[in-house]
Length: 256
Length: 291
Image (cartoon, rainbow over the protein chains, first blue to last red):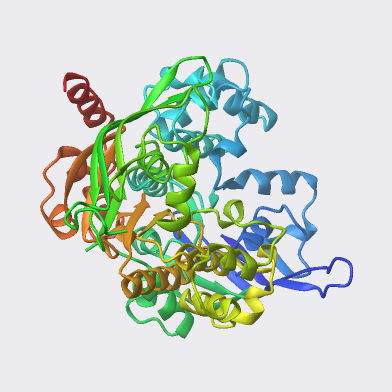
């Protein structure tokens, strides 16, 4: 289980501006095989929390633990294992993929770098993860450049790259927000499928409430760096406690 | 501007084709034989996925396609009875100054960063208008939902939040008392609660001024709540048109049906997530080359 426990992140002010408490005493938990959603708007601290869970920025106080082991006290090997186990899929697939690398190289390099496979095994693993995200037959995609793929296909390549490291949790920060409905549905289906079949856990960070209602098991609502409400998905959507949650729910336009 | 026949639609687009240059000296037909009308006071939605040609159509109607000899436009765009395809730049300037207000996704590219918001609203008010201009500026800002109008008027665009900038654009668009507002993804970049407020503001201002509206978006739910009539675009073509309610409840075209199914699958509980299959897209492409 991945846990952020009473985590606070303060960004020092620049020049004469005051320090910003981006994440304020937040506790969230994510389990493999579970779809956890962290919902919030700009400035809620949700993306800062994502970067904390990905071990990309240090925290000011609190603990981040994987299966009870504190990230702060991990040795180098344990920390590498953590970074394999907790993977990222971010919003902008074009910006996250090197435009000059073909799909096989994009994924193969990660596999080799982390020693997940070698020799022929690299290609086998690459094909395996591409098939897992529905880029099938994989042969058709191996030698494509990012610009030769659609937005949804690029997002799937990013998920495949994350999968190549056998992660237990994937942190998806606005991973489908910019996609058209049909493409969004396709990528979400891949994620739900990976959760069900491989037991991968997802931390889904988004402002897209309808999508949360569709796929999440557990929901945290963040505002101004704090978790203002949390609970099982159905409970939060049917009986929102916090006024802010109620406002968020009322704001989402839904097609009848 | 209703000097011509009152029955003629304010915007009449016929057989519009737009060719855009691509990197390798060839061109693509971004808009293919589009027919579209907007009547006085009518609210029209233009929906489609990215690359469908909806924004290019919107820009063509606003006369805002890139001015390159490699951008080719044919067909007819009549605005208030006047033919605009091939019209000189001055004619477009006149149309935009007095008839058409525009709101786009990224307000920063349309706001002048070096000019106070109030001055930009003032610029938009017709010179012929009488009365205190400062009062008028504050009035339009308030109408666009910016209650603290004096402060906003004195601000530069970078000093405002995203939602406030979008409202400032609404104020600038309505200050010319336009016959038509074209809004292209006006709330796509905004948070849900801000989006809800900006849409409400747009809804109210358009109603009060009895302005026609063309709302362009990939988000069917947003367009559905704001429009009377819907055009669905796919691959540069209008594939379906009709009253919004009718198109949503009883779609005729296979693409519209698939699009609605995918949108609804994202929210309806217990329904399997649906994405438009490559097979259907191939069939649609074939049907279009036949036509």
